[in-house]
Length: 394
Image (cartoon, rainbow, N blue to C red):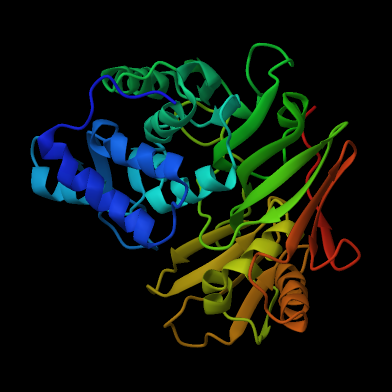
């Protein structure tokens, strides 16, 4: 364990301890070593500014900056609240590309890593550097390796970490390819602050047998935070943590998300029918969305308004398949319209029926089994309903 060279000043302490108290009382952090870390590291030094969304959920997002100079009371209150704070957005879509993760989620993932003295950890997604500082406080700088896709973000995090007295090993690059120093990382722990669609092969190559891997797993339909144990020879097993798990998706572009072809925005209609599954079910049943994402790979979830101002939720696939239904609160929510070669809504209803048949469980009964040639997610049992994840990049 190391201590910051510059502990919280008097004006920082109220916010630091308010946040620490919230995390302790909410049982998000319970281990003494992590309690000491959240009391020692001032989050405000890592989030000197953040962005607040100004438009409605169905419109193209725009953002208003908040910083210590012009909005200090609001800025400080939000920095020490249990909120994810957007610090960077995609220049084309306006969607967030970097956040300071919600402190309760960070604390839960750190505790679930079961770190011990002497462990080496690879952190994917340095971001602002705040969780990196918590790791440095817990393990010491020399046992923390951290990567970020954006060189400018890595430079900023390095500066913020140094100002608090922490100097971990930092690198830039696509974290899904692992630590750039070859395949011999030998890490006992790996934490990814972004969500992946499949567990990268490099993460298994660079971690010891019995190593713990924590990451977001899923796609645009839904994702959750999973905890895996590396069981050796390219195999791993685990499951999903309870509670919220909204982490930003991993990307290979330093400034924004990759541009992928999508189905036509409003393609020709091929049919309309009633459906027991509504947009509210899809948007607000997190575990169902998680399973739907594993079943309907490469399907995007789009929310928009039509020419008449009506709000819709639409599934779409690059092959031209699509299905849309009115958003919650709109008329005719019991109907779905579709087109294209695949019946996407039929596939979604199959997942809905499976989830309901098994008692509408939360994420805990969802397991993950990984072998060198296959990654599989299953419900309740490896012999139960299962879905195969995309093949990882070697």
